[in-house]
Image 1 (cartoon, rainbow, N blue to C red):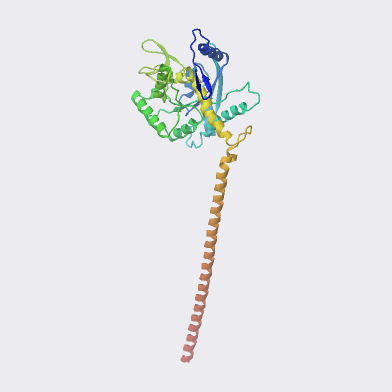
Image 2: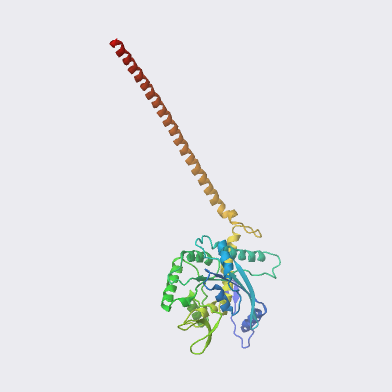
Length: 389
């Protein structure tokens, strides 16, 4: 027994168990009774395999097929949309309310200025919705719409991240658990893919882009080693396929068949699909949910509480008190600049008027001198005529 800061701490060892070791079993029953809510956002250019990967991850047709005529019509609109797909999955008495957020139209245009705004606004709106529910008197039926993970699909160019990728990843990483993936990894050779991933890691480090890192378990060394292997593989190289194909050795696997062989989805020598699935579903889904709660949602809540009172609606960006002083300062600076330019214009105008008056006087004097010369010439001519007579 010891006393620390007025509190008594006692350590005892009993011969008979008291039941603490059954806490994992209790958690197992609670988890099986209450379905988990998990929201996954996929962001990337059209044609990078977002829909195929989602269907491959959950082994079901969650996302519908692509209507190319509709896609062409959407491209004419030049807008980034947000599609919401909801499903309830159950496996061995465990249920998950899954929500998939797709972003058709992202990065598909020549001018992609501010194309990330709908994505950022959507994530912030989900935080806002959850915070408003927390502030209600009755909170038994709170629905969690927050985005717990964002898969950012990188086109397999083999070079490096594009400026658009860097800008969007920086903005998303401060709001959601960002997980970069290299789409269609079977289009690159193993050496090119390794170099491509190294270049992406360098850019991510240089621009301080925060990607999700699974926590390291200080007690379970095997779990910690698994988390390290996941981080070493990021960005994950992905091959998506919902079709079963037959390999040359007679196995039936999910993959893509080529002339040279089969690219297997769940073969770790071919891609990182199994590691991504483990990160999202099998080993770190609860870490993604808790990280959303403790890091991203708390950052949003704190930022909002600093600018408004409890229970007030969200302040619009143009009405944000933080920007009012800057707006007023810019307005004063603009007004002063206009006044300064007006003063310079008046001085220039007065100078032009004075110069005009001087030139008019010079013109009048010149005109008078010419008249005088003409009179003198006429007088001389008259004198010459008189002498001839």
